[in-house]
Length: 213
Image (cartoon, rainbow, N blue to C red; front, side):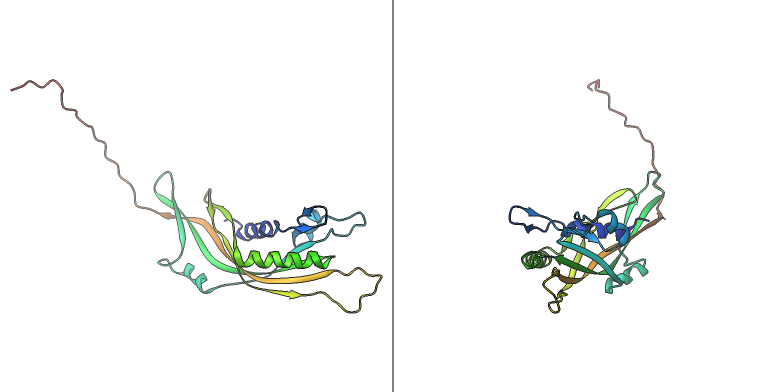
């Protein structure tokens, strides 16, 4: 059985990695990481004083939920699945696809308000115009396109604008909560098929030398 959730999360990271900020001299992409300590520690880029290089986007999974279409897997008549024939033609490799939904929070951390507002605006345009996330899952040995879809997103400002002294750096933070439609995969069983029967036959060619009557 393939691991669908890690595949979708890797696709989400790639989805947000094409954002850009202008440093004055050139443009660069912000860091985009999953908010998991073991993974972040291995990929987080830090400065000489061991602080994260900003801007930084962290993706946190906040929950799972079924949707109206999830129940189709309970019916052998209406459920969504894919089938692939085997070499012996005695069975099909069956893959069940269950529509499901995950909830995420994307935190945006920046040092400059210009970078912060630019990233938020880019993300809003991205979510409105291109909410589809390209995902390719391999099941039963065959790559299959099973795209994800982002919906029901909201943007919230998490910056503390009060009680900041002149000696402290101000870090701007916003959070974007959204729902992510996915398709969970189950391909651990085979379905019997009808046996095929072949018949040997010969083609008898008519002789070219036929005596005329």
